[in-house]
Length: 185
Image 1: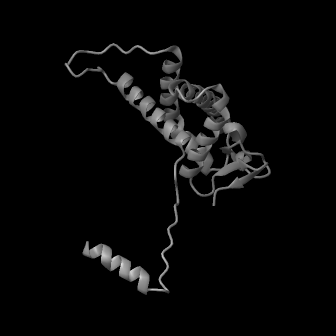
Image 2 (image 1 turned 90 degrees about the vertical axis):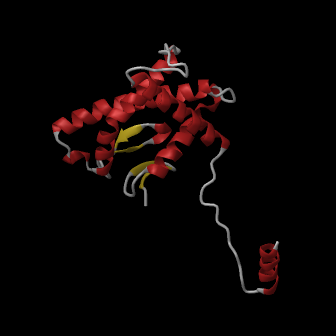
Image 3 (image 1 turned 180 degrees about the horizontal axis):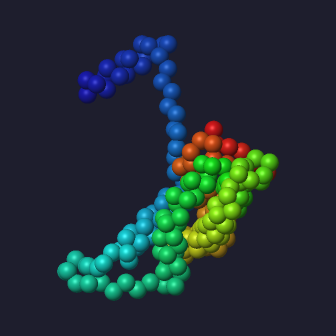
């Protein structure tokens, strides 16, 4: 009670005191749904990759999943496997986050892919094809796992994933935004 009175006194009698609240990040409902779905998929990856899955009674669980769910779990595993290479190629400015949620080789005018070895170029082609495939599978799975979403929400799901990727990206990584390539500051 005393602290409330003190705060009231402070605000009333301090005319030059201004408190400014900046909300730096507020997740949308869609972002929260996607994050929840990703956590579920991550748990399934761990569960499936473990030697045994045991329920509360100590019994070995049989894991049954839909075809799309199985593909999504495999896609998450593949993304984890390729993540180091993707980060390396982004750091080297060979690839960037393109339109429609695709990861792409940067145009020669801005990227440094011309400096890549033949081996790196071959690896980049394979990894980009896998990553773009995996992203589509996961986006479709996110939609099917959330009763509030349907195929009409696909573009919104892609935009939300792109936003998450941008937030986690290092400065200097390339993104295609507003019709042109830009580096994250």
